Length: 385
Image (cartoon, rainbow, N blue to C red; front, side, top):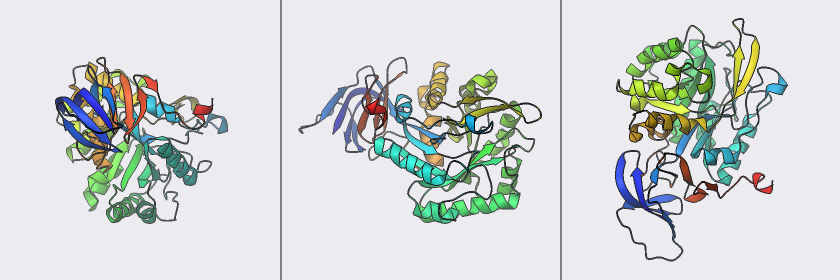
């Protein structure tokens, strides 16, 4: 058991100064001045610390990504320590452009490894292309029968790298994902890579308007890649959909497209509960010229996830709102009902921040991974170096 004493708690709603009791991997009490008369209780003094839910990153190339510039541009695998230092206690892995040299079997194995090392992990089946690659030959079977699979993605639209799927193909894919989700109690969400092509979100809007598939079956990502695409997302949000803003491309963007700025502006219009952030960590951030020729490459970083939430808080967005895109909102769209908030019965995923909002301590499923800015648990092979 772990007892966190005198923490300023944001659930993400502000709860004031409380003590938090963790037993095994769950939160069992949040009260003022808790006293626990049991042996083997670890007590952590959280005076001057802020307790927030562990961060959820819904789009990470945990195996590495890229390859758009040839084999030498394939990016490297995610490090467990990168997640810990970023305060990420839940991660969702995906393939991306390359569904050939990187397999779903390897993606699943990497997710299992990250779980064994200490964080919660899930995966999407598929890659950019339609029909998507699967483990069993069926989207429905993958979601129902395989523990880690919570949806399909990232499926590419409006992009020169996509397979140019038809509306009927996208409808069938989303319908299968939905049935798989219903049968398994999972989200069955379709994570959609939206490129900078002229159709933007139009295919998804058409599907929602011409079928019975609910808008929350889709999570379009990279929506902040350009102003025109971002502006087109207002209709999607007004229809009740979610959008995902990519944090790793911050240095490549104009200021008005930075996730923290977009969230702040859209929150003023009442959309704060419909926006998520994801890092696109380890994904390649390729640059192409006007003819579609590859001209350069950057690599996404999971550390960018909380950096953008922190920037929002530092620029007059209340902390309880700034936390939403990396905690509660993500848990809602992914139907991770035991994640995203600090309350009794939820998973013991907690990040302690110092007064400057820097990450100080990370607890995942009741296990201390980092304490007072010192990493306690490292990945298996990282520990040997």
